[in-house]
Length: 188
Length: 219
Image 1 (cartoon, rainbow over the protein chains, first blue to last red):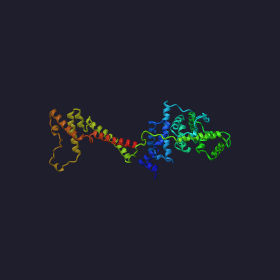
Image 2 (cartoon, helix red, strand yellow):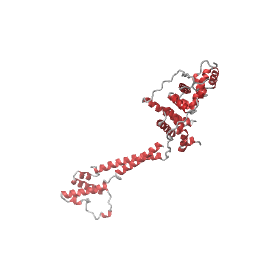
Image 3 (tube, helix red, strand yellow):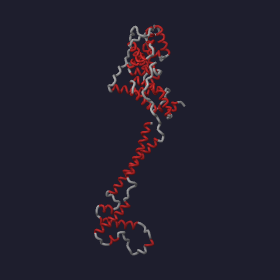
Image 4 (tube, rainbow over the protein chains, first blue to last red):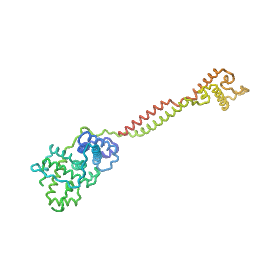
């Protein structure tokens, strides 16, 4: 019997082990949606408590995806509440047109040559903040957590086509921001 | 450009992630073979994706794993019994309070008590005498053998002096008060234990139910 089965049968130790396995990934994802800090920590902790209480209802194949669904739903709820209170600006409606590609300035390093260092990470983090929440959510689930498009559709309760569009638009937004910061596009 | 007449912009990320159907994948591949612009875009998307994937994991400032312990199975019956017991003892408290207060506030059990409470001691004595006579007549004689000894004598009430003589009003009142007091001592004894005992038990059961409920909610 694996840890998930034992946790479903009420083994708190097994759930504790599962929660520790995913704790940081959950926090990292939620922190990039809400911003790092106590709010993101509370959301993850509440999500883990909720997961423990509703563990008997878990019937999927991916426990990780199930946890992410609970946590990101809570994070999105917090974002929506903040927008209702006017603490956050509303996301612009999805643009049906294809996103544009910013023209790179000459002389900068090519994107494909950018070393994964502190400077690049800071630039990418700053670029991610510019991405609308739903798109950022999908992009991070894909690129950071490695979920498939089908899993992302299940986690975010969206159509596959919507997931494809969100990921693509989010990547272009990040790419364009990096280009605006001086990196060239690929030579192709 | 081959395979597609227009740039498959919206499919490039899905192509990169191998999320297209085989037919779509083949069509985009064919297009990329002949389109330098789209190839450059795919490379940009790939580089962007790699940078995002390489982002360091953010670390919380504290452990986010809740302290979990599933509540023992016996807590549910404890909660149920606590709630039911609390309700029962509240009912008993109210019932005993009503009964006891009823007997203390003009609710005397006999005619004599009620008359005595109204100050009609003479009538109370008469009522007591008639009650006693009626009880004696209704009850079978406890000592049948003694009947011949008492033959010729009419049954006498217990308060013979009062009933047969012509006592003063003061002595009549004193006798009535004594009789009523002795009757009260037996007939209107409080119902069960004092009501406050029921109230205390109700509180104890309620506390047990609340503690079990909170523990169940936490678990």
